[in-house]
Amino acid sequence: MKLSHYDGVLNFQVKASNGNCYTASGWVYAQTALVDEDLHHIVATYDRTEGEISLSIDGEVRVIQPVNGGDLADCDH
Image 1: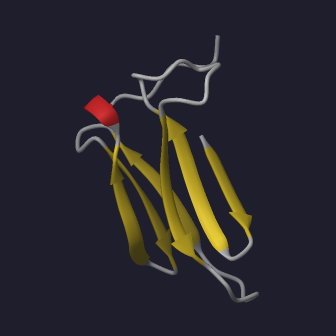
Image 2: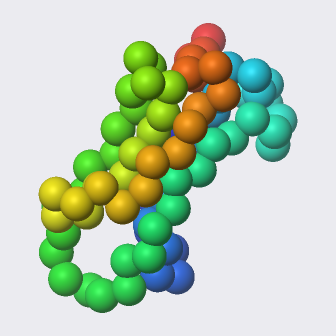
């Protein structure tokens, strides 16, 4: 999992179970614009039951993205 902010875009990315941990394929992204320099409360979630990731800013869900099959790859080995 990775949360980043670059060039006005807030990005949350996870590796879906259908992707190899060492290749570019299989990444799922949830992205939304964040262009100001104010402080924000940011929440990035993964819901295995629903099979999706989401990204919220200041209590407002900005984006929900499905994860293939609902499972993430196990890249911590």
